[in-house]
Amino acid sequence: MRVKHFAGYGSVDVRKINRVDRNGVVSLHLRVSGNHEWGIERRDPYDVVRWIGTRCDKNLTDSRQVINMDVEDYYVRNNNHLDEEVCDYYITYRMED
Image 1 (cartoon, rainbow, N blue to C red):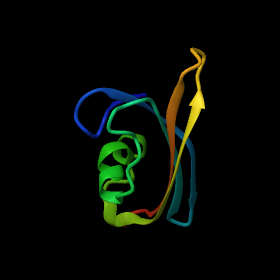
Image 2: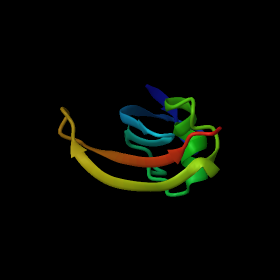
Image 3: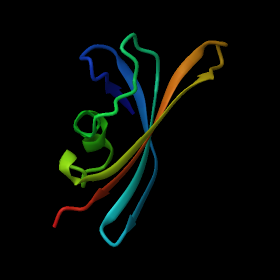
């Protein structure tokens, strides 16, 4: 899905790669891709949940649910032989009661 960039202008692509729920603890893998002058890597759970977490998983409503978050940022070459930034977000959070 196309999502507005966290800086407020432009947009990037977001895909939910995987979601696993084990006894109320969810492991969520999101992939953001696209080029933007501000970049697409955010390491603050509050920003990530507000920006893409709530759009991709309706059970993730508050950054205080996040137990752990890992981020991998890299570049891939697309069909036009241009490098595109890709950022994988691995978010582990607790479901709210």
